[in-house]
Image (cartoon, rainbow, N blue to C red; front, side, top):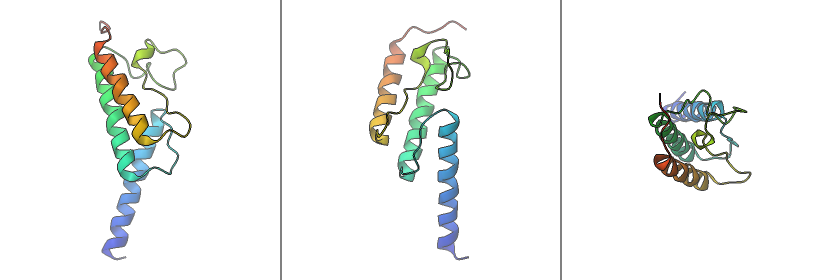
Length: 107
């Protein structure tokens, strides 16, 4: 196997891992996203989660897969059908900005 093939396999493995991490959080990933977009989406979700934790949210309960989150403000927005990754990232960032103004939950 030459160096290019090895790098392509490493990139494919990284994309698969990022997509799995997003899906494990309940984020819709179609498989048509560009690798850079997936990485940016994961970063946006992680920023949102950090904001949730800073405000006393519980990521185990305040989750897209939860039927009864403690606070719906602490749940990352659901990706719309056909929504581009860039538009979705913008909505996640907007939700994080609104969350910073939302009252914190006591520990």
